Image (cartoon, rainbow, N blue to C red; front, side):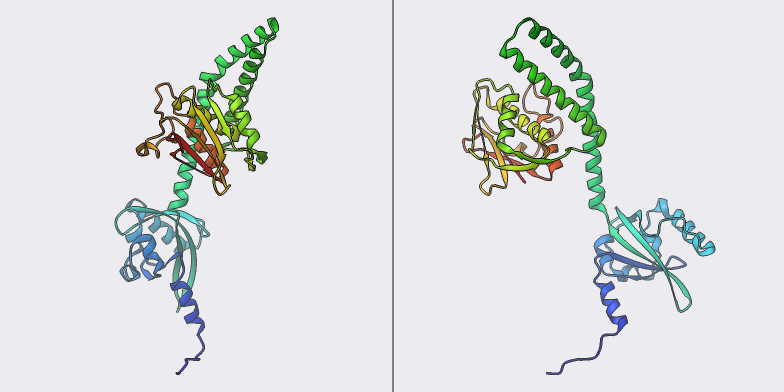
Length: 340
C-alpha cells in the first residue's frame, strides 16, 4: 500500500482551515463583487459559495442599506478612513429566502497581485438578539410589577401598617403580632422588587441557604387556612437569593391553596436525583393543554387571580439559572418541579 508522504503546503493548510470554519467568510474586491465565499456562508444566508461568487455583495444587503454600503466602501477606497468598527459591527444581511439575518461582521483588508480586497468574517447572532429581546421583555414586566407595587399596593399597605400599630398599642395579642410580621414581609418584598426593577436583574446576592428552613418560613408567610403541608425531613442546601427563593415558594404555596382549596394538602420534597425540588398539591391539577401557558405574565385560571404569581416564579427560576416544569402530582393535583 502506497502512502502519500508529500508535505502539506501552507496554502493547502490555510485553505482547509477556511473551508471548515464555523463562521461565514466573504471576500469582495473594491467594486463590491464577491470573489470568495466559504461553505459556512450557506448555513447563515442560504446561498452556496458558487451562487455568490461573481455576484455583487449588494445581493445580500437589504435594499434600504445599499446606498450606505456603497458610500462607505467608496469613501474608504478614496480616503483610507474607517467610518465603522472593523473589529465587529452588527448589520442585517439578506437571506436567500428574503428574510433578514442579524449578523456580526469583522472586516480585514488585504492585497493580492496589486489588487485590493476586503474579507468579512460573518457570525449569525440571531440567538443572541433573541436573548436580548427576552431580557428586554423581562425588564418591561419588572417595570409593570413596580408600577403595581408602587401605586396599587404601597398605599393600602401603609394604611394597614398604621392601623396595626395603633391596635398593638391598645392591645397585645399574638394575632396582631402575626399581622405586623406579615405586613413587614410584604413591605420588604415591595422594596426588593422595586430595586430589582431599577437594576434590571431578577435576583440579588446569593448565599448557601437551608432549603427546609426557607420552606417553613414561606409557609408561615402565606395564609394557609386549613391547608396541610408535608415536607421531606432533609431538603439539603442550595445557593440562592434567600429572599427571592422564599418569594418563589410563597407563590407556589399560594397558588396551590387558591386552586386546590383551603383544606389542600401540599407536599414538598426532593426530586429523585436530589438535584431539584417539587411542590405538589392534591387538587384537580392543571390540564396538559394549558401547562405551557401558566407561567405567562397575567395568565390565571382563577377568577380572582392576578396572573402574576407563577410569572414571578418563572422569573426567579430563570434568574438563578434553574428550570421549572409543571406536571401531574401523585394524587392528581398540580406538581411543580424545579431543577438546579
